[in-house]
Length: 359
Image (tube, rainbow, N blue to C red; front, side):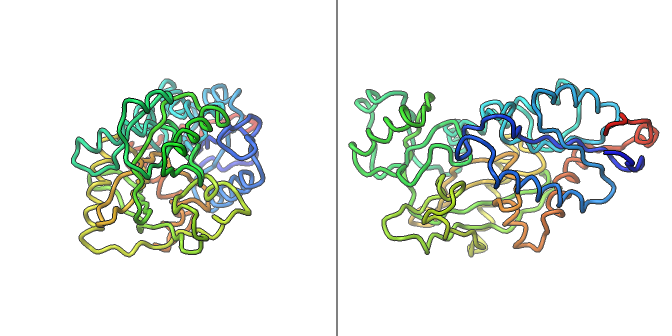
């Protein structure tokens, strides 16, 4: 980039590395949908005035680039939810690098990302807080089944993972035979070696809640959405599985997110619980909370998602659109939330100082 406006605020944007494999994605590589998502992001950010966005997606050079930009930057927009080197277990390493460099950034810190990547830990903490969660148990091997009691149906999922990794339309099991088969699939085909969660399957609505900002007082709740599975053929499970999130040309193409029509009391209850979880896990600037309603309407926490998906067709932007918030506005809100949290007051002498000629 050349010919930049010296009065703009320089914002490095951290992204996943399209040069590297990504085991979570179909085909285990970036595809056209990923490139489209980045194009939509860049188009949206180009609509935000007063900022100059500089994109960093080559992880071999990320540290070098951040050090180079450190004297000139305003705030880092951390959108690298793939993790360092596209390893989801290393998502926390990105903010850790920024902390070591003493650089300001949007979104959650390393500890929050580490905690929330562990589904069992999240449920244990939520349960201690008085927030309902599905019954669950962790296993490491098939032989562990000999010493536990479970009630079917169950949903079988990796304890460590996001973006529906390892959760397919076959993940709900009704018998011991299906459970054994699913565990073998996860260990063999998926090559997942970490603990496996066996979780009570909740039959009700699948809902998501989004927060932008920071409690106690500087935040907003986006409209709550639910997944509309009404168009799915009979026999397919009503879950937001890998097929629904990642794969085209499956029956899950008909699944859509719609506004959740909840009573005022239930809406207030869920929002209060989300705020408690946001604060307890030290989320920052934005987060998403996934719930399932039980048969009697009780919200059961499934996951806490700090730094949730930023893509134009993701759940967070779908929520924002229901509030007539455009995609550029949503991104601007996240940046503004971080600025207010950090109370950033830039020295314009620094802003006007010479920047590297190849910005």
